[in-house]
Length: 213
Image (cartoon, rainbow, N blue to C red; front, side, top):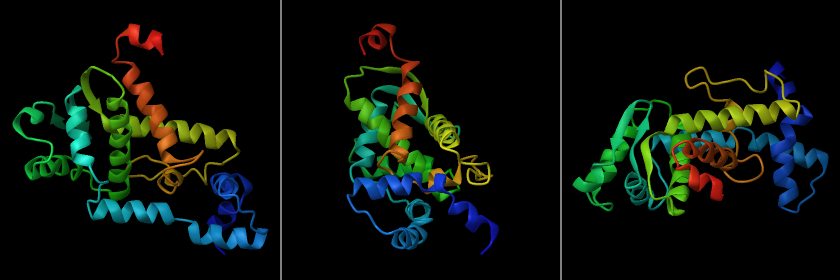
């Protein structure tokens, strides 16, 4: 095998996979576990790459984006802004609106990075559902993804991951292992994105709200 194969088999790399095995209630043999882990290796990164390349978004995504835009001054993706004024010009179910949102997301050339941005926007929609009246600023979605990436790197390092395993994608600066993490679970992207979004949004909320939490 090539050198990277050795790194992938180190115990600390198994933490997300081991967590999944434990939560599913199955206890495979070491041999079975290794085989299934090898086939799972790269699975989520491939899925994100495909979804991003095909512009796939979850059902109801555009309506959710419309809702967030009513609670902030706009969403920014790598410097391209989707202003809140869009909600006054278009309805949430309008094709024109979804095309507008897509045109901003399509400024991101890398499909798997685009999908993490979509996931970050989904996390923001959950925050928007909580009675946050207004976030008085433009929300930079990529900042949330990068905060999540930093949290992920810190945690993986404390679990013993080395620099080889935590290699970053040169184009986006995102850890390749994060691209290949399932959305849910202890080491899931949603876990880190939720923490990152809460940290980021906290800065814009009135202090009285922060004190109540």
